Length: 410
Image (cartoon, rainbow, N blue to C red):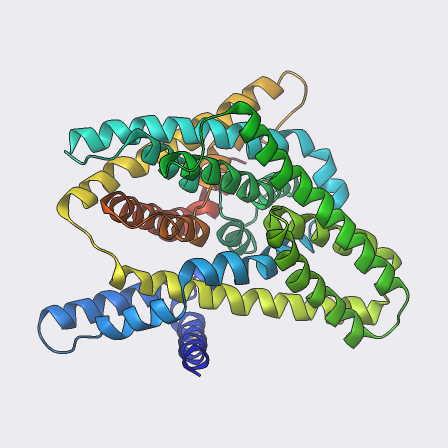
């Protein structure tokens, strides 16, 4: 009952904030909802500071009842990734496979290393004693672009098709790889595993390659089931079962559920859409998953806005955030520039691609969720506060101005 009450509160706030944004602010829905949620949180904090009303205990209760990490990583993420991949054209993705693959793998490792090294220097300069491995952990959780934030913003941008597919494809795949890097480093930080290239390679193959093969398998099984029935209610339920059951089973088998959902979504959205569905089924399927996508995005960004009330911000944390935000952008610039410059010898790219993909590398709820999964302690408190600051900058500053950067590159 408590969980139902919490879900009712979040859904009510999401609907109200979406209405206010649509009527008065007119920002992209995800940005508008998070901005209103953040403003409400700051007003409540101010009211508490002035002794008018102390709403913080209620938000703390809500955040504990709806655990952010569990809700996103073991609930919302499967639906959002599948819904995002459902509308990606496989032929377009295949044409950009090399740049997407390099950005989602080499780019993540390069960015993790740069952010880890530079943030260690920043922490030392500010007197914050953060072990180097925790700096690398911060680099791993903040390096992947968030598919939820990216897809939400790209809906309202006017990016050229080839550029759109690069940003979308990278955001869908680098999440799974970023989580693997994070888990390896977390094992080292907590003393659970040694830095062994064989262990890392096996974990990578199991999570990433295994997740992709598993997604292909469950996607194909669902495709066969869809092909054998002509009833859109049953077909929509089959895709829902694919997402819920497939993601849960992938995690149980220690495979990347995120990558499995992306691959399955691509299979159903392309092969399944063409060969296993009638026009009526396509319309109902698209409507259903678009609605799921919008609702979960709205609730997620309400949660993100409210999260500021349960974080701790000291002066050192704020200074560190101000220093690290440009460093994160710099690491993104380098991790995009090197692959693009190397590949320019063999193929052409959209003008201003480096600037657009640097600014379009949005961070979101996944980074916050990973920061929340860190072991309790001073390191977690620092990293969580800075992660939240980077995410705020990414969504509220980079997101609304991405369209301007894209138009400036034409």
